[in-house]
Amino acid sequence: MTTSSVEIHGARFNCRFDGSPAAPVLLLSNSLGTNLAMWDAQIPEFARHFRVLRYDSRGHGASAVTPGPYSIAQLTGDALALLDAFDIERACFCGLSMGGVVGIWLGAHAPERIDRLILCNTSPKIGTPELWNARIDAVRRGGVATIADAVLERWFTARFREHEPRTVAWMRAMLSSTPSDGYIASCAALRDMDQREALPAIRRPTLVIAGTHDITTPAAEGRRMAERIQGARYVELDAVHISNVEAPAPFTRSVLDFLTSQEETQWTNGTATRPE
Image (cartoon, rainbow, N blue to C red):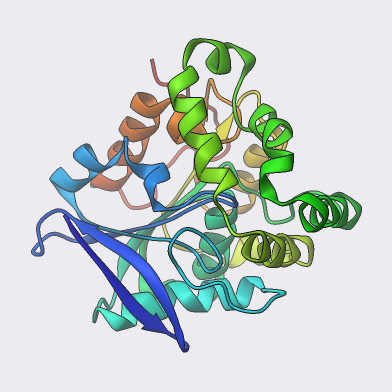
């Protein structure tokens, strides 16, 4: 493991490498209100096959909080600049929620930089402007911690919250420590984003992962997204929104099965599979 910071577009970004420098690169992009630690459960297995690069998105974790509002083009530019900073020509990409939105843009507009694409618990358009403006107003009034209970209910099933209190407390702390200005600026990027017409332009091998109980980016939207991306594979997990934390083993296995498969295009388009 190597932790470092790198300057991107005049701002410092916190990032971390795991795995052999000789391995192909897998870039991980975090969700709104988290940081690179959200991937901790996946790293031991991912790093056996890949040189894993993860980073705190702009306004999150230990990365710079620059003035907002942010845009999806700006957040995607950060991901590309991160690859450039380490002389990485191509990488596999896995992003969840806001990170998945970045992945949609990359797949449609920068396919030459992407080997395989994993879009998790995400959608080309998430929520409504009214929803995001209400979220922004709530955080502006009281900070991110004041919305933690409501957000955690949208992240995890009641069953998981009851039986995994330590993990939920860890995620609550991660969310609550997110800088309010960075959170608000990122909410604006999601509010203003609509990539529905970009989906057919994605031509890289793609895996879409959804959560059966997700209300933020519902499974039905995940299936529709997979149907609009040529050859995309669809996997549905027994989870809500942060599926890699709630269902870490099937999530990790699904991603690695996809990334290590020798098949390029023969994915089952729009057919749900549920790993054991």
